[in-house]
Image (cartoon, rainbow, N blue to C red; front, top):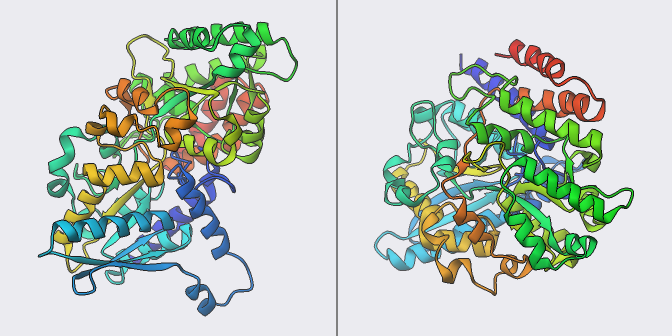
Length: 494
C-alpha cells in the first residue's frame, strides 16, 4: 500500500513540476509564481535564486557525490542549543530562519536553537520530502512546501505533519484568513505557515498614460482610482488607446500560459474550480466564462494583446512592459520584485491600485503564489520546532524581516497600517512605486478571496495553459465549447 501511495504522490509531484509555467514562473523568474499549479514562485527575487539553484542541480555531467557537495547548507544559532534540520528550495528563505534563530536565542536564552538549513533544487526537495514522509524516516524537522506541492504533502495530514493551530493561535486574529486557509488540511487543521499574501493588484504605468493622454499624472491617478468595475477599466483603456493612437500599443495583455485572470474572477464570485477538499472540479463556472468572454472581446477589439510568451512574468513580458506596449495588468504584489530586478528604469512611473470587479461590492483580490512551511511528525522536537516556526513567520519581528529581506506582502495585518513599517521611505519598493504598496493592501484587507490548490489542480492548469486559453484567446474558439472540452479532460482525472 505504501508503495502505491508513494508512486501516486511522486507522479503528481513530477506533473506539478512540469506545469510550473501555468500562473507565472519562468526561467528568469522565481520558483513560486505559478500559484495555480506548482506555484514555483514565492514571488520575489528570493525565488529567482530558487530557479537558478534548480537549473544548476539538473545540469548533466555531475556525479551524485559532486551534486551533494553543491547543495548549499548553512548552520545558524547556538551550537549548544536544540538542533533542528530545515529544508528549503530557496536559499534566502534559509537565511531568514538564520536571522530569526539568532533573535529567538536572544529572547529565549533557556531554549536556544541551532538550525541547519539545506537548500535543494525545487523538484529534488519535494520528491525527497515525499519519499521520507511515506517511508516514515529521513524527514527534517521543518520544511518549505511550495503551494502546488502542498496537496501532496498534506495528504498524510497529522500522520505526516504537525497541526499548527496551537502554535499559530497567538497571531491568528491579525493574519489574513484566506492565506491560512490555503494551508489547511481536509480535517480543518492548519499544517503550513505562509510567507506572504500574494494579493493580486493592478499595476498602471501612470507616467506613460499621462504623456499619451496629455494630462497630469495626478489626473491620471484620479481616473485610475475612479475605476470600480471591469467596464470602467475597459473604458479608461479605450480612452488611453484613443489618445496614444499608435499601432502595437495596448491597454493590457491577457495570458495563455497562466491562470491569474481566471483566479481573479473566481475570487470575485466566491467560486473555485477545484471544488475544494472533497468537492468536484468544475472549470465551467460562470465566473470563468465571464472572464474568458471579456478577455476574448478585448483581444478582438484591440484593447488587449495576448501576452508575449504567454504571461508577463517572462523576459519577453518584461520587455513588453519596458517598451510601453501595455500600460496596465493584474499581478500579485510579489511582482514588485520583477520591477526592481528586471525593470529598474521604470522607477517612479508605476501606480498600484485594487483590481476592478464585475459587480460593485465583490471581493477584488485573490492570493496567488506562496510557500507554506511545515513541521514533520518525525521531528524529535515538534513543540519547539512548531513554536519557533510560527513565531519566525507570523510575529511582527518575523514579518518585518520577510518584508525587508524577501520583499513579500506579509500576512500579519497588524503591520499594514503601521506607519514605520508601511511608509518606510528607505524600502526599495516604497521608493520605486508612486504610492505606498501597503496602503493598497490595507484598503483591500477584507476583500482577498481564496482559490485552493488541490490534487486536481495540476490537471486543470495543464489543460488550461496548454490548450484551453490558447484555443479561446489565440484561436477564437467559442468559450463554452472550449470549457466543455477542458471539463471532459478534468473529469477523466477525478
